[in-house]
Length: 452
Image (cartoon, rainbow, N blue to C red; front, side):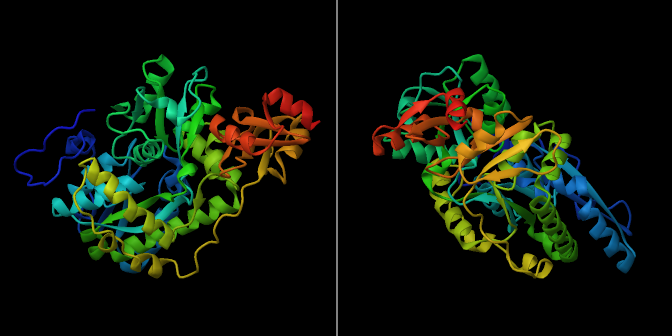
């Protein structure tokens, strides 16, 4: 989508993407000010149902009804009636547009959109605050560049001069920009970048009108699962945290501090549910979104790519500050005061327990048909052996270099003597082979045969 100038009545120092300028009438959020009467308070929550790294503040939370339960308990104490209006969007940009119009109170989005949310809110006199995290990956593995299954491209360096679709202003675009720079490619002139919604880019990849697609969770995994794409670049190669979080209108947070606390309590409960019952959570999110449960589990499972924890970890905040120059260079924001954007007080009030431990090393995982739990294995070889004659629903293996979980039947396999290693991308397999004499790429079928 093109970048267009803002109307003259908005004295902004920077241009913002067209997606942020969607007509404000597209959502009917009422916010706290939209109460039906003096005894009714309507809270409007913006979320992205298919951005499954936000489910504990969106899709899963909504389906569990925890926020409504917390508000009902509050209503019994103060005599008010609380109603929740959920607004679903494909990206964070329209959520920001609605928040700056005072029509959405609480929203969830990725790290790059959060910075735009902060900048846009300040510019338009509707400041917002980051109050919690939904899911994160400390290496950046939530964003992936994929190509068509039959593409001859084998590494990021092969993208020079090619057409690449991404969503400008998203974390996926940030990953692409950083990765191209590391590969010695000018992200503006070295490729032909198309600014597209994820679904449009996915269609373009399937139609052959682009060479690669850089997107965020869950698009890469979904396309790979469906056999419509293969991974070219694993965002974890950047070794820089990426996350999604919850932002709230500052005015709402002051006027309805207790309601915000209830939301964060509900988010904590949804996080506990997801971590204790990952298969059930994946099934629920799949039912609500239409995404395959196997794809949801790839990201949100027990050893999934994403780790869920509401805590505003210092590593994540430090990474957020490193994102600002990327957005400034793209003329999407000016200076952003990250420290003033973050407000840890509501989370401290709402969730007094310590944060969850960081995720350990991912393990190979087997999901059998008809089972509500999965099995884990210490090695990919053991997984393949156990899965050979079983009724398998999905198999997952961690990348031997980055730890990023991937579908076993979509991974690149390497035989190293009697050992088997799995990788998300051909470039990772090549790196391993260069370091291990005698190692070589084998097909998935050959890997299964060797494992038995």
